[in-house]
Image (cartoon, rainbow, N blue to C red; front, side):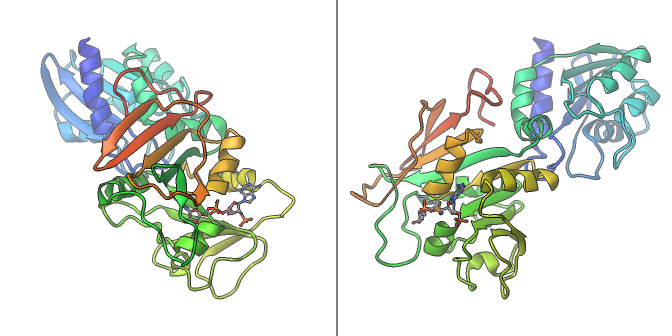
Length: 354
Ligand SMILES: NC(=O)c1ccc[n+]([C@@H]2O[C@H](COP(=O)([O-])OP(=O)(O)OC[C@H]3O[C@@H](n4cnc5c(N)ncnc54)[C@H](OP(=O)(O)O)[C@@H]3O)[C@@H](O)[C@H]2O)c1
């Protein structure tokens, strides 16, 4: 129980790296002696110190007491990446007891970090809050084990199930409240890429950036094999990087372009391209057809559906989820339903929604 409580603190620290640690996992660490926390740290950004190093740096030059326990949610690394192996650092600094949530599925580490520590005489306890820790690193774990990014589908629908009114004039037709907009921008800041379909780009001209909260704007991605998005679309304004999957290279747009063969499945091609760039997660913001392809192919992990308070009567029908939501919450006047794909990463029981 004491281990659970301290691991929970470790997960809170890890979450400080949300939106900045990727493509690395979110990792926290704390050094505890008796009922005192001696030092804490977390992994902030790729290339920066890992959580264990940050924690031991926070301790300063002091020796690690022999009875101190280091808590870390992910197995310490055993390989030379951009920083030297954390397992070696722990041994050098004299850490004698370690509590970890779970092993690192990354092939160069998986079990090797803990093996090295045990060989050096460190007492290791594994499996403390493992489900919760896997949940906060579901993007990293899905990417490393499935070879594709974690896919979050998100849309807003009217009370009567439409994602858009019939179109007389261009421009977005508001469904969700300003409160939900802030939340959506937080969601954007938590993923590495954000994808929309071509008709969404034509009808809504979205910016797809992070404005209502502070945070990193993700890579903007457009699937537009027919080259229908206007040249003056905001997505091509150069304000943030944009990647377009196109049938043919277009001139006059500020975007990286990847050609897709029309005979090939665009979802498989896009996921593969993301994987090659170490993009661990994407937020798909519609429209309905694009969502429908992800849903039918089973290539999604979470869906977040915002239902606004007004009815449209007619328009573009929203995708229909085949399962019940695992959680429903209110956001201002809106209702948000969260779905998880049960064939993918499991959400821990209880009130976990990080
Ligand atoms: N309420 C909301 O949350 C929300 C969000 C976004 C959009 N919208 C509304 O939704 C409307 C647009 O939605 P929509 O359903 O008409 O279009 P859409 O999903 O924006 O665009 C259709 C997309 O499907 C892609 N596609 C075609 N075949 C595919 C395949 N086999 N596999 C994967 N993708 C494939 C198309 O790619 P190609 O172009 O390359 O063929 C295109 O990108 C707009 O009116 C917009 O306002 C609402």
